[in-house]
Length: 163
Image 1 (cartoon, one colour):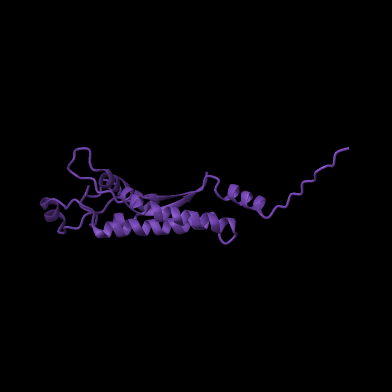
Image 2 (spheres, helix red, strand yellow):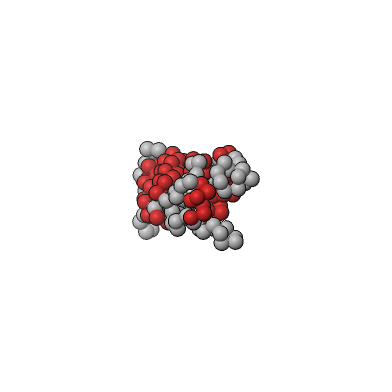
């Protein structure tokens, strides 16, 4: 009779790691933009004179107006592109922290959301080309793009979403 081989399975934590990953990353994501109640508020600045909400004004600036009178000044997409590598590293660190039990993936996504909101606000503060038209500067009394009352800048938020 041939000798039987015996297989001994030693789980050195793999099962726990896989359970943690399945639980934590089940559709979890961070969304940065104009997601909160501040975004639904009527815009107080010169653009629309209270007729449009903040998210509508932000969308016009992000993509430019359909008639071409307002040029594209991307505050969200360009910020995400500019910092994509850093955000990927932050996500990798958050996944590792989750696996090692140092923090949940959701906590890492919260941290990333705060960082991304700050980056968008810094980009708005720095000014996004092109320069404003002379008529716009005269109307609002400032040459600062995307900032009139700072209502739009303060409406940039994030949400951690599941599923």
